[in-house]
Image 1 (cartoon, rainbow, N blue to C red):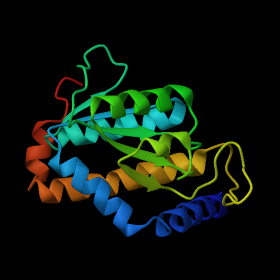
Image 2: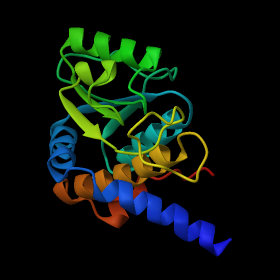
Image 3: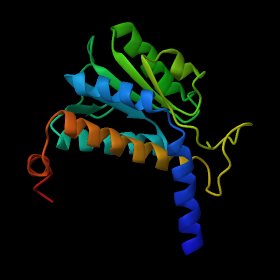
Image 4: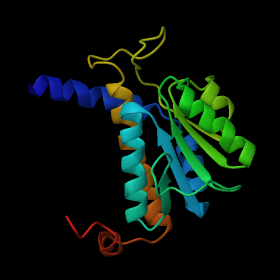
Length: 183
């Protein structure tokens, strides 16, 4: 079992070490300058991006998950983070298209920088991980489906949150005050 842990961690390290610093910095700049941040993804990608929105909220950001009943309409200038490993998930691509029409800043998180999702993006965060499709040229993975993409995305979102907290001068104590207190 320890060998499997080491193998999974090595895969994540390999993928995250190949993410371009400039792409992370550009995404971080968009996030820190945003008045409102919206997120969306389907399946496990949706879970990753929801956890990102939650942590951004803890850090004092106005963050919303598209599709939730309390999410307001997006407006020109809002930032939207869209996640799709393949970059072809129909609902995510449609959301990107609509957000572009509205004048939003779009951060596309994907394994395919030439995908339909990426074509609408203001900024691309290319994560060179295996997807559920196991396309030619993708990194190999011992894990099922898009687990490597999901894990790498989660780690990179937490790195973006660290940067956001630093740029917004958010302390642990301030962040803790925004954590749920009715659980």
